[in-house]
Image (tube, rainbow, N blue to C red):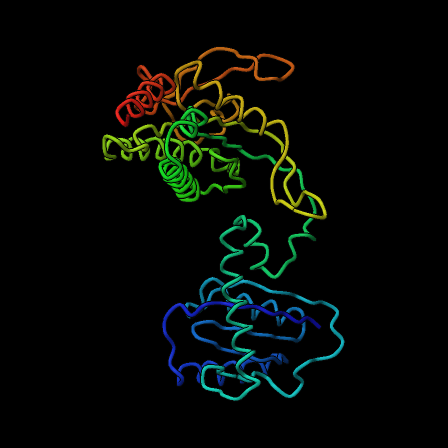
Length: 350
């Protein structure tokens, strides 16, 4: 047998009658499928333990994930080869903790409430790929490394060291927060996965089939950064927010890596190094989005690109580098622009 524990948030307020109706329907369905368990509610959170045949549990969990009454579903644990049921007499017992009293219930409410808060916090700090694996009822630590082809995207803020050295900490925090939010939203919107924040930088990857999405993400983030700069006040550090992008395609190792102290679900390989070097090259060639020939070849739509020539990117041979035309190409001298703007901003504050 299999036992699964999960929690989720109500997608909308549910009355006592609706919760009891959910329990009654689940009880009938579970009895037919040989599933037993308990459903706890506290505030706007479901906590549920279900046990039964492996296939039946997996089918039920898939229905939960698709149920529009649940949101932010997260699997807290999945046990296999279970020999004895914890709830042999309950096809589904519903316990609404908010309606109960007594000395024993108070600590339980506090425990589950803190668990829900902690899970929300942890999810904010967790890479989306790990959250998806856990939502599927799998342990990320048990997922083996795999070798796959990915498009790797690397980006960071132009002249961030100078900005962080000379602007007030509040201005630097606003700039970094705005930049990371803009990149994260733009990458996710086009099918990418942010795998790591690197101070003022972002590393992400796309499936090879989503090469167009990777270019769209770069183009849209550039456009949004332009809008942010143009709408910022004259004294705002956001007027200094420029970024370059490097895109590379190739085989990477993907999965959980790290130590007994800390683990990351990430990617490693030569394409990561190449993407970072392409991003650094944007300052030299004066173009904000650079990529390898493999990325261009993987796209399904025609894109306005220029081949800039062959460059040493740390490989055994020179590599052809292409630049995406983003509308910010002519005279893109971000480093010089930031330096002038920073000097004016600092001098004006004296």
